Length: 115
Image (cartoon, rainbow, N blue to C red; front, side, top):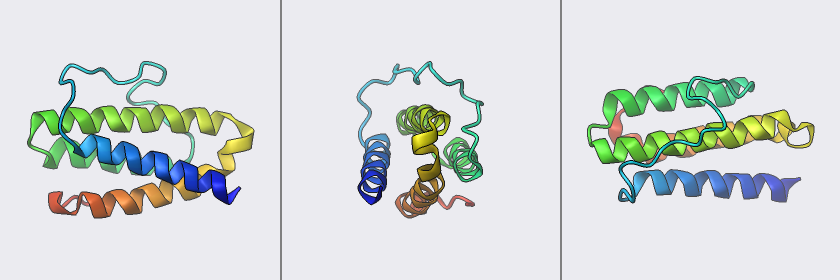
């Protein structure tokens, strides 16, 4: 199970790195499987997503970066929702979302977001 959590953490950190990188497609759309306001169903995940979206909306001024970050969080939401719907992976989400929040807080420290 610890290898699975490590894999999840690596994927999530990779998504964050991609979101903070140079824009590849300014017109990219978020994944359509989960709507923007839909809840994952795990409090730690839903709270992280709400805080992240608030930070991006209020603190990120570069439109290209903001678009990439929104795409990244939409991907997280979609992936986490799928994991939450699967009884075999649901239990790993609480810790994964806590770790993602901590990693994101460090990565986005320069934006002075309220977490």
